[in-house]
Length: 191
Image (cartoon, rainbow, N blue to C red; front, side):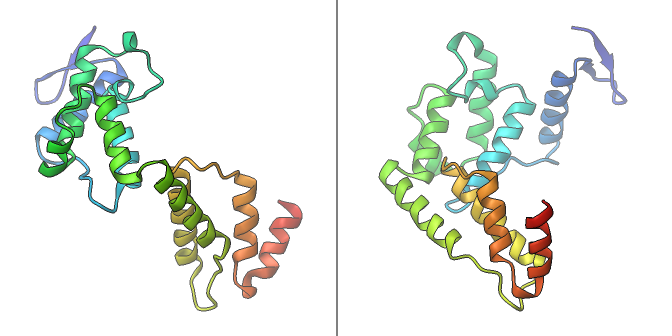
């Protein structure tokens, strides 16, 4: 693979994916880009950040269940395991220590935080109910409502519950405050 010399004199790969991985690794090593830390309440956001980080480092295939075992080389597997292990606390690390692959660790973390199927179904039902009853408050700003709305949609989708975009948009238009009804009507009519 062709290499160039960086401003610091280090050799860097010229291929873009490798450059991203090298830059990410160098930034993390310098302490400028910390690994996202998984907590009890941030699984959905953590999983998205980790997906982007693993993709940038070429290691997402080790976690993705759809990748075949021949597509995942040992280096990518080790990279994925290292990144994941750096982003969880010690007690969680000990709970997944017996897992052999990054995909198994990822599935275990998902199960710990999203839950087993029945719990997931109950959570989806609860979030759907909250979504169906969602209304914009009269004193609520558009930005605050949009943040609340998109967070709720994101949580539902993270639990693998499919929500069609058309349904989400219709709900958004129905949920806005009466002072914005003329805007919602125009969007519904011409959108």
